[in-house]
Length: 90
Image (cartoon, rainbow, N blue to C red; front, side, top):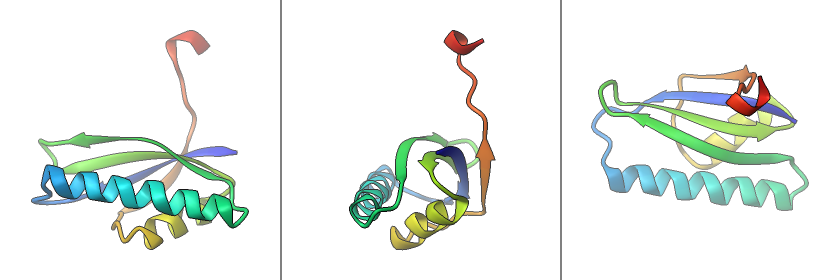
């Protein structure tokens, strides 16, 4: 599987709406896994100063990430494949 970042700008989003979006993403990924698609929501970071989120997914394809976000009804500006670097890995 590859890792992807989903970038989005969510002006005026409330903490409750962020939680709701996270729950929808988690649920949609679980449903897609039950359907045989390899996808997992890893984590998201919210940047209050810019009202942006960066959401990370493991998935078999970019298309799977697009589908999960569409099912969860969470808008996004772009999806990019990323390479993870950690202190333990370098």
